Image 1 (tube, helix red, strand yellow):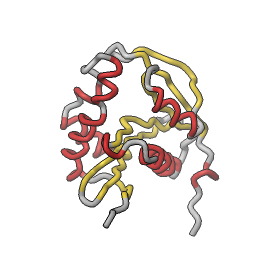
Image 2 (cartoon, helix red, strand yellow):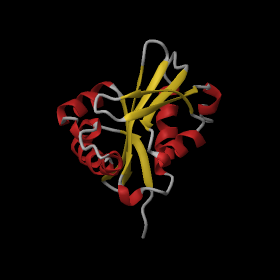
Image 3 (cartoon, helix red, strand yellow):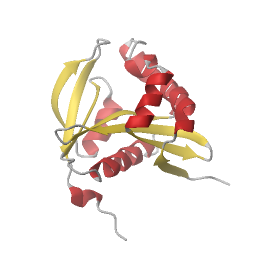
Image 4 (cartoon, helix red, strand yellow):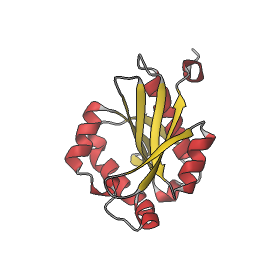
Length: 167
């Protein structure tokens, strides 16, 4: 009997599972760039716990197992930053990343003052770029991260009508 994946707000008790998932899921990115010092692999558990306490953090669960996660935060200028979207390698390729992205967008769009979403990914991360473009994101710039990885910055407007929930 199969189980379905549910998406919900993360709790403080999820910190260790998210930490381990993030480390596992970003190995492919590290390999792609030949750089195992990328921030998702070097982030401390305490730093992740701080994000859980202050940011919008969603998890995808298969039973009791966290198989996906994403974080978001709203800046003073109305830009909602989305970061560290990750899916367990065995769950990739089935639309879970896109579901997490839509869920965090909806959660952030529900906060007063949200005008746009911004995220970034590495220039070589074709699957990520495809998913973000399909979700309506457009490249607006680039930068080099402190770990040396060249990033593409993508944005899209936050149209509240896209996230209206019908009763």
